[in-house]
Length: 490
Ligand code: DUC
Ligand code: ZN
Ligand code: ZN
Ligand code: ZN
Image (tube, rainbow, N blue to C red; front, side, top):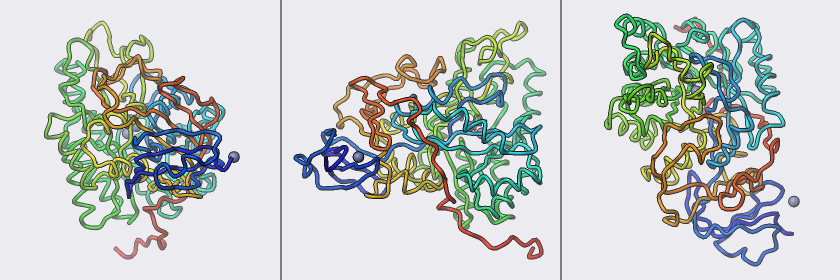
């Protein structure tokens, strides 16, 4: 065979270009792009006819929680690396970056990394890497940033909220300075933890406990304040940051203002901030718990519009899922554990913060038809690969260079619009916040390193458990080498 696989007649779409091409795949890599149907009689072990459909570099979801302990309220993540990555490939995502959380009682980061490696290895259906969550930046932990880099982990996440995770500003400065030194990218969860604890106490003292008060407890300004503070800390250390899961136009405006000044501030948003509003939490009984995530969905249509605008104008660098799956029905560890005798509608404080979404991320956003296809690829695949140091191995279709990770959609308008149902998804959560939402597209095939792992019409998940590999990451393309930071210059 000249090729292991040929994809014929795709509307091949990268962050830069769209055109009708054939793709030749050899040894797991993109080998050749050629004019459409010019490879029709070339020998290959396998031929896929895309029939003019979009063919894109596989989705890179840089924000996924799998096999995590209880960090965000009562409830532990229900997806492991097997179910979580099956859900990923069924939704067209070929690389995920998950979190390895440092236990605060451990002065080292390496145990967390090894634990995550152990959970993932032999289980994953797609490629993966880890971000280290730093909850205790001891001298030892900071010194280990260099070891993380050697092991191909080039990003850390810090939190400005959550009892078990929240860092003080001086601790965040320690992390940022070390990140600058070692070429590590710092992700920041920007919500003011003290404000939201105080707001929660105010609401509880009035017995305002239902799921919808989760939104009330975290107004936009609480995200706006933390976003502004995170930017200021980054400005002091002169090092890039990525603000994760930005939900509000207020935070987006703050970020855009910093970017306009030339500061290296990057930002992520998620489908929940494009589609959900506080109305989705204001349902009868406890139902609203299904849309509890943090930051919360915002007030109304103008807010959703603001986030779409931020994607279109480049304020948001990446669009991730923040897949953070819990059981709605689990009496012990899931969302319903927030229901107690004195709070039959649930106590929002105890509802774990997060929604599943790794499988629905691409189809919901492509179906909304709001982003030019090149922009869609940029924010869902290419930019996350660049930002986290795996480009152009991932997020691109460069012959001889890029892995043959592909998402092949249905030819335009060939699928009848259909509603998303939890029953059709592959995660272990027992609900989706997008139940009933209509989509017009879904990945028909997903390929990881040249192998078909998802074939929607012939077998569904056809990949193998353990096929997914750890991807060693380098320095972020958005983070240059810098001279030593000097306090005396201020
Ligand atoms: N932050 C996340 O990144 N995921 C889930 C909950 C949270 O607050
Ligand atoms: Zn071969
Ligand atoms: Zn977060
Ligand atoms: Zn998250």
